[in-house]
Amino acid sequence: MDFRLANSSEKVFTNILMWQYIVSIVSICNGTFQLTHTDSSVRLSMICNSLFVFNVLFEIAVFCWFAGLFTAKSVEVSTAYYMYDWLNSSQKVKKCLLILMHHSQQPIYMTAGTVIRLSMASFLQVVKAAYSYFTLMQSLYNKSI
Image: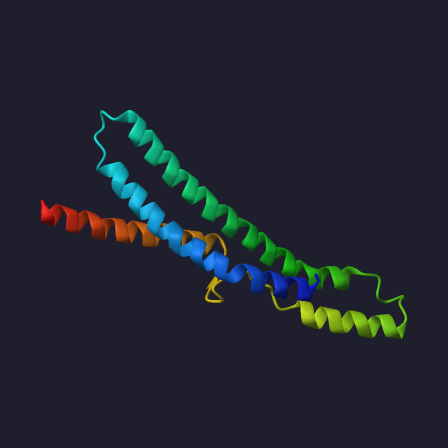
């Protein structure tokens, strides 16, 4: 795996992914709140809100899924180097492989804002946070009625 490519990808996407992470939490919370407070006789509004929440969930899930795959594949690189026919290689190739194996043992993570490692676990954090804010909004709404 080209670590320079991974580092440059991280630099480009980390802030974008952080905003995506935050906006997803707010959007899921808001969409769910609107969905629960929409008159059930207005089916089009309910369908639109449901599709919106599903779309936001799907969007952040895709980011988290592929970031998790990226991390899993980065771990496999070291094993691939080891599986190479290094016993029959020259001393120079053996030294290069040793250096490459050493550098590739550290997994590569895609992060949101260099703080949150993206994976399916972080997707669950988005859902949990959105639900927590939703219940807070729901309780504040019920108190105001």
